[in-house]
Amino acid sequence: MTLLIAIVLPSYDTRRMRLLLTLLMYSALALMSGPAAATVFDEAIKMPHMQIAQSDGMSLSQAIESVRRSTGGKVVSAETKIQGGREVHHIKVLTEDGKVKTHKVNGRRL
Image 1 (cartoon, rainbow, N blue to C red):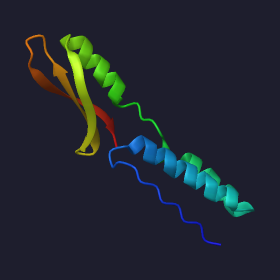
Image 2: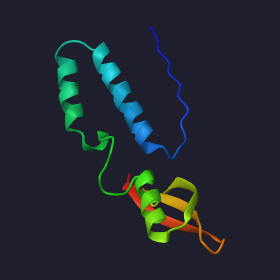
Image 3: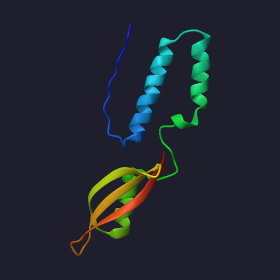
Image 4: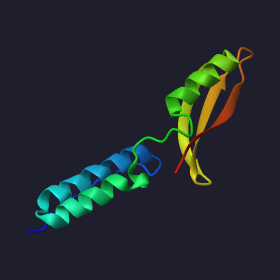
């Protein structure tokens, strides 16, 4: 029996992709039986790259709140891009004088 799963996610959504990979790994482990499954499961728990959330940078929502507080302006858009192996949050703010300024905030390392 062959099982094919196709999932389309935006390339910048690393947390969702990590969660998906973790769920797929546990599903594969559930299909395995015997000592091989126990060994693979023990190794998977030790793998540091399987962490879903990393604490070395701001999330997009934290960055938005930080920029909003520091500028006093209205956030008009925000997106996360991958640059140099880390997330960079691009937050556009409407200032009191009517100009839109873009603020870049470092996010999590990948």
